[in-house]
Image (tube, rainbow, N blue to C red; front, top):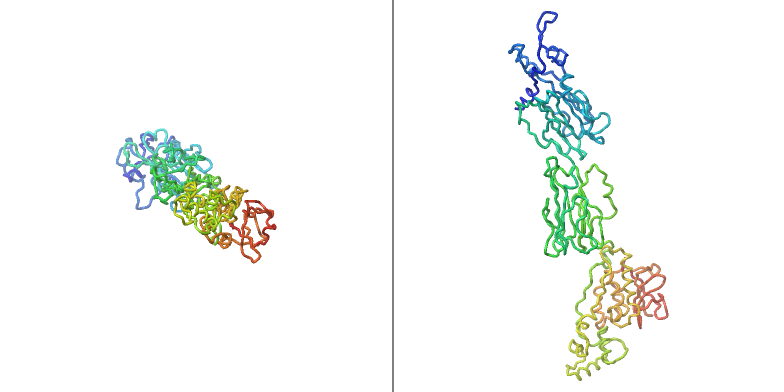
Length: 635
């Protein structure tokens, strides 16, 4: 069938252009085609462009002459239209003329087609074919007729699409069909009669084309028509939905819009993305995506409308990845960004990169996706803000105590009070027993007073305060478990800078101003702390856990001077002359043994717990002036 299209479908009945007979100068008879007044002999007609053939190949003219010889001159006979076309190619220029059905241009060489020209062999026939090109930076040009150039030459502009149509009597009998070869897509299918072929809005170059004529009566359905033209996506082609804590499913939004919530502290639990490629002229492919889920990690990839995440499990999405597949990959970037707890809007990620966070326990609250053609400016998506984090904004070097922005929870506060225990619980017992102001230690005086109370109240007399004795004294069970196991509320988060961590520590210390000094204590503001107890609570609030130093251990016998143990923790030691706000200042006695610790505020001032309360004092004074050294918790 294609052989017929390439040879016979290019024919037109001479009822449109009748053959006439006349005697030449030698008296012989010549056949001519009347082409609108220009009479040419058959031999002359064979000299029209692209009518030469090899010795082995029979030309359309020779075939037609045989048919003419078999018929009377006055009968209607077929005559082949000489359809030919040529293209102007990057780095090559004009190629040779091609016949109907032949490929003009290049493939596999990444060379753009810049212009093309079609010729039907005569001015009359050329007036009945029209075509135009869609050109880079220009768009659709005006229609031109056969023999004229569509596109540009010498401007280095790619031709991206074309349209061809017939007019007049040719349009009544023939279909003009054509297909293009497009960069990063390949061969598209045939279209006909003025339909667009190639691409638009993608920055894709046409590299080659093929044109054919088909007789409407004889060659119907012989050409495989289909998707011959592709164009860019619209914003409506990309949609995405979300499932949010306490709300449920949210309505879908389109490319460029924000999905989820901000400022409400609600976690995103699931989402789905769909790219509509059902239209005939759409680029083919999928959009795929996956989510990183709390306690689960990265899920499997989902595609085109499938749900990623969880529902009914109260699990937060922490990060996402999104990417395109198929033809869209060559022409589009998919950008996306996330709104993260404590960080706000992160920077843009693209094409499968990670967006959001891992390993820092932050919920994703909202996200935004944009499809951007690669030919368009991408600068608005470039930012110094990172798109993804798996570490804190600030972290100490690995050899030092690591910052952990997690609320410290202490257990084990329900300990009994026996010989040499210290701290708040001891102070509460001493006050109940009327022992007045004294060091909060289970010394012999305190133990004897406890025994007397136990004997008087019918309790086991052993001088040890357990929960039964405690409650008998009228003290609460809640205080029994919590007075000695307090940890300050965390004031920092993964987005906190070094400076913010330091200020959180100092802010907590200031909340203890005028709090009573109680040896071995590290309680809430207003209850009681000693020097190391104050430092512990300040560090907790800034994300540093000085373990094994803790309020519970501090109350035990032998751990009165936890300041000495703080000194030995893996924190950066600096010289006194290098002291900075937020450093810890350690003091010693005359023998060089550490006896005290304070928090440096700058300007030679410290905040400290010193008998009898928390105060702001000069870094050196008459009470303690021997400085052992300086430690920097936030290195």
